[in-house]
Length: 338
Ligand SMILES: NC(=O)c1ccc[n+]([C@@H]2O[C@H](COP(=O)([O-])OP(=O)(O)OC[C@H]3O[C@@H](n4cnc5c(N)ncnc54)[C@H](O)[C@@H]3O)[C@@H](O)[C@H]2O)c1
Image (tube, rainbow, N blue to C red; front, side, top):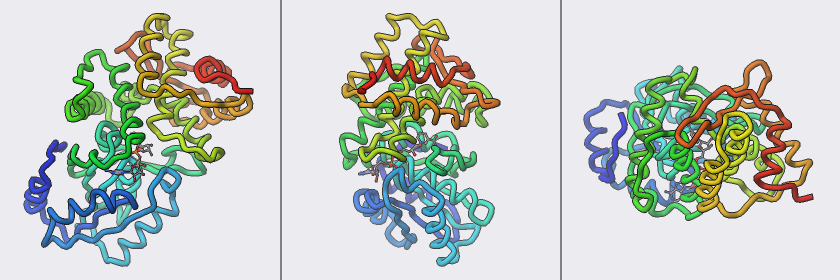
């Protein structure tokens, strides 16, 4: 059940109607400071446990999971306990994964605090962690008992993180034929994005078909994100990588899915309006990034399968592309800085 409410007392009332043996709030170092005090105040008298992890994608790993599981064990959390994942997509994906596997599965609530997590990561039951640098390759599907979306949490989100969330919002505007929002109204953007994602997930929960279109921009986006995580000192946020990935995959859509030049220009302008700066990559970096896409979860029989656009609002999935295609697309969209 997805609740849209900026009233934490409503969450408290919901919690009072449940019967959990213990409650543990999971935060990262930033949501511990900016979001946890608001939740703790609303839950006064409930005495939840609180465990915090370092922030950032580089900590979405098995060693961090071990610290979470060790804490829960030390606190004697049993199978009737509840975990509240209070944070962005990293806390939600990893906290959910830890909950889904601890003692064969305990209940958890997603309480997303970034735009990206509110419009995307908290909805649809995908949980997981990165392994050997590869994005989300260890994970599971498990629905939370509830998702509580409170846009007040976004007030403390750094501007760059807010913008990164727009990457996934733009994705909905490219894959959905009916995405209409007031672009100045965050609450409206969040609700419409969740509506699109929920409708797609409900038709194909296990991602056997249509749900794959939610990965538009992610074949190349994840490869870029992985490359930056493993090799670069500057950070590339998930939403930023997806934005660059969508541009490159829109280019390939002209090659393989019949996307018209004019539609490509529309997509490019929409992306560059939010993400004007282009990446600086050498040819050998572009080559390495293209090869990373060979580990994408959507691939079949070691063939890279990509989501492309026939037109804005009409995505197709499982389109085979090659490493050379990805290199061509990146050279076209970000250029070769040699
Ligand atoms: N499960 C899914 O379906 C799905 C979908 C999309 C993305 N994801 C995953 O989500 C992750 C990205 O999520 P993200 O962009 O939320 O990153 P994130 O969780 O790293 O959060 C971004 C940063 O913002 C900080 N932060 C969070 N909330 C804050 C607040 N209210 N005020 C101040 N600071 C705050 C965090 O500490 C962190 O530094 C990636 O790992 C990606 O793979 C999952």
